[in-house]
Amino acid sequence: MVSKIVIGQYIPGNSILHQLDPRAKLLFVFFFFFLIFLANNTATYLVLYLFVITIILLSQIRLSLFLRSIKPVLFIILFTVILHLILTKGGEALFVTPLFTIYEEGVRQAIFIASRFLILVVMASLLTFTTSSLDLTDALEILMGPLRKVRVPVHELALMMSIALRFIPTLWEETEKIMNAQLARGANLDSGNIFKRLVAYIPIFIPLFLSSFRRAEELAMAMEARAYRGGVGRTKYRMLQYTYKDYFLIVIFLILVLVIGWLRV
View: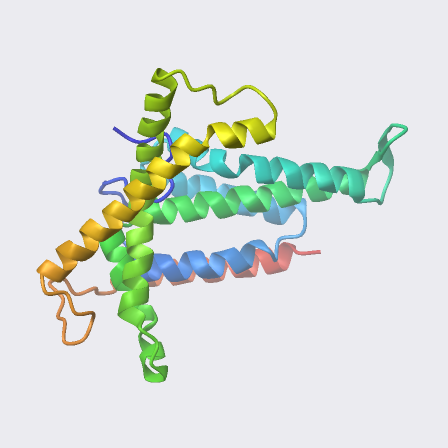
């Protein structure tokens, strides 16, 4: 069963995106985030949307999962849109009230900012949906390898990121179980002002923190029992190798850069 919160989950599959090297996917998503901020008009955003829709279809992952990945940040998107609608001025006045006026430029900026958020979330979700936590750990460790020269604990950092991604769905599932248990005992979590709601959530936060610390302790004991001593002297069972598909990803990114640069105002 897939949790209601899909952030950090890996969806097994055999699509072309699943087959790509995790290092190539990680680098592509990283630089794609910068490319999003180069878009500044309707044409560039249409190109980005068309590209995102295409890779969603290639991933063979249900669209509903991507929509559910947007849900946790939906409040931030709506809040940002409202701020731009109210505060951004320029162009023709579209809607006038005694308190505020919505201008054409405000609507334009609100749509563009919302589009940036949506594309960012979908691309980040696509990376975790098509890449296992183990592959992400290996990719991060290899890409951050040069930092070892300045005594940065690369292996430990990559492992921490992998564990964090792995336990996001687990913590959400644990939270849901605790909430259902408290509701079965008569807890009221949805009524009253914000302070009463925060107080009502205390019986949920405390067991959740205790459960998280217990899981962390169990994980540490399991790693110690298996003689884990960090990345020094460790070998890998699977070696990552680039294929022609990964080099083709570079070509696609360069084409996107050229198209976005050409369509920019």
